[in-house]
Image (cartoon, rainbow, N blue to C red; front, side, top):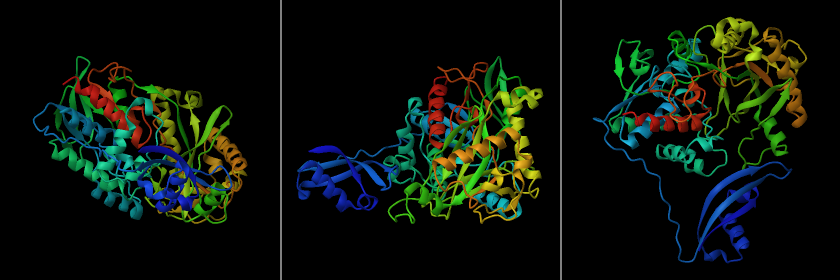
Length: 517
């Protein structure tokens, strides 16, 4: 017999196979010895009440029956001499587009402005030590894109747009743990992701695909409103009838290039704000209703949203047990982001808290046309740079001090390794963002007692939640409506947010692009 059941267990019980087996037998009214195997299909945490519970969906196997575990596969066929499709960018959208092309039988040719993972690490170390921003190799650009050095969260609501299970299976095949197929909110961790990205690169190359690093696309070859290829900063020309544009939301030079060439772009809403850091123990006590977190529970997270003056204020990319990192892509700007290792074992919890921004908020930037949001975003980052130490030190302020418009005479310890400096963020931040953040923090403090605290510090600025622009495409063909053969993909195109949704989008574009070859 094979039967799926639901169990609600304590964290300790859910961590022990013997307890799961015992509870399963009780639920099915059978003897424990009759159970030959147990497989956890789904796992989630319910922390809504004072006693935290773990919800499990279990496949119970009894008698002479057995569990047939079909392992996912990736069909690596030789595409060396197959027709080629160019992919611009080696982030999640670009890499998963390449994997899909290989499965279809088309040769992917990836052009990536940054460097391979191991070399990116050196550039990031230089950023930490010397505050030097390499515009082509940093936390946003390079092999794996922004996803490589990130929290590695794999949760997406984009289930109607593609096969998110297949993305998780491919990550599993390239080195992720099987837990990502089980947990309701799966997570890999920044310490594991580089190995997975390296393994994906090896799969692409072993199949006959190409990846060209340290080459930034500087122009598109277009004839009769159809893309024919791309030109790089090294003077190389690559030709194909189809180009998948997967450059990420921080590739401002690509937006400016498209705009200069008269290729249609669209303004869209986006969000900016700050990154907030609390002691992880404080978030644990709030979310798990305890003084000390159980050793059987992971570091607690949170998810907040409020409406303030007709704009959403919400948490973004919450990183329990994580670190704040510098995410600037050019000199003269300060941008912060968050990441967590797989164990989520830092003493800090951080999250972006951001304010929704739309065209009505950009009246002072109308002279920039469709690029208004991009210029507003840049200005926000320049303000952070100018109001700190004019390097990668982050301007910071205690949370209650920020709400009360007070300068923080001292700052709590922070995980941000480039350092913080006390700054009156309430004075230089755009008024609408400041006021909505202040009210948002008050609202979140009412929802979770203890969250509103001067133990918490806010760091500026969290500005890269998404792109302020969309590169439009036809809903059916996924091609740009103006340029035949150009397939905008992922976060940079404005059609995804996060690793999984970007990967799904890249695969969808690969399927459509392959029909042109």
